Length: 102
Image 1 (cartoon, one colour):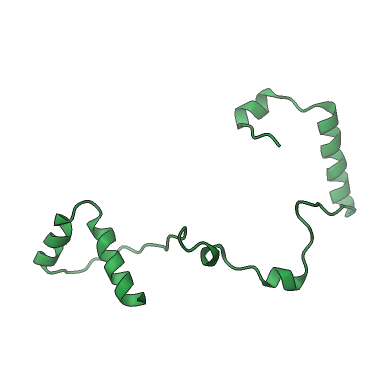
Image 2 (cartoon, rainbow, N blue to C red):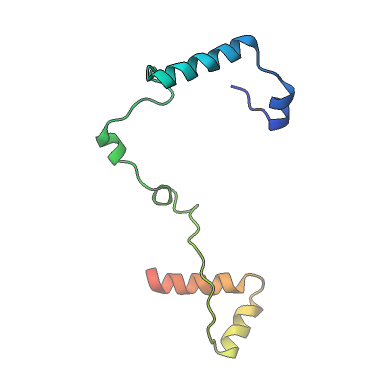
C-alpha cells in the first residue's frame, strides 16, 4: 500500500486495470454480491456487543467538552495560580477534577 497526497492522486491517473477493478467492485456492491474482505471480516452480534466507546479504550486521548463559566475566586488564590505560570486555568481545572473524581 502506498500513501499519496491529494495532489499526487490528481496528477496520477488511474490505470485501465484500476478503473476496471473499481467498476467491478461497484457492480458487486449494487447487486449485493459482495465478497467478504479479509481486512474487514463480518462480525457476529456478540462480537459487535464487545465494542467500547473510543474514549473508554483511550482515556488519555479523550478531551472532555469544556464549558465556559464565570465564578468568583479569592484574589490571593487566583494570584497564586497565576504566579505558577502559563496554564493556570488548566491547573485549577485539574485540582477541581481531582477533588470531584478522586
